[in-house]
Image (cartoon, rainbow, N blue to C red; front, side):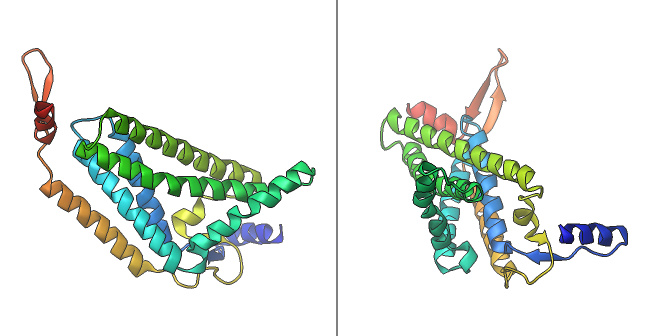
Length: 245
C-alpha cells in the first residue's frame, strides 16, 4: 500500500516510478514468437492459398519448442522447466487441502497459471508432429482430424491462459501482462533477473525472421486467377496437390 502511494506521489511530481526487471528479453521474445506463430497458423489452417504460410509457422512452433526446452534446461533459474515442475508438484497438496476445507486461494491462482502454461507446452509437440505427418500425406484423413483436435486443444489452453491473466490482473489490481511485454514491474528493490539476455533475444528473432524469409523464397508460388464465373483457382503447390488427388 505504501509503495502504491509513493508511486502516485512520484508520478505527480514527475519523478520516474522505480521498476524492477522480472522477465529477461529472451524469454519475452520466445513468448511473443510462440504466440504469433500459433495465431498465424490457426488463422491460416483452412486456407489452401496460405497453406505454405501455415506449414512454415508450424515448423516455427516446433523450433521454438526446442528452444524453450533448451532454455528450460540451461537457462536462468526463473525460466527453467524444473521451476514449472516445482509449482505443479503443489497440486497434490492443494487437493488434499481442498478435501480438508483448507485450500489456499492464492496457491490455487498460481497453480492455475502453471497448469495452463504446462498444457500449452505439452500441446505443441503433438500438434506439430501431426501437422507434419498430414502435410506429407503419410496417413489417411484420420491424422488430419488428430491435428485439428490438438489445434483446438491448444486454442482452448491459450484462451484459458489469457483468461487467467486477465482475471488475476483484476483480482490483484495490477497488470500481470506487463512483465511479459516490458520485462519490468513497478516497485523498489533489486532486479529479480540479473541478466537481460538481449543478445540471445536478438539471435532468436534473427533466426526466426531468416527462416521465414527463406521459406518465402523457397516456397511454391501461390496465386489465384479469376474464372469467367467469378470463381478463383489456386496455382502452385496447392493446385498440384489437388491434381495429385
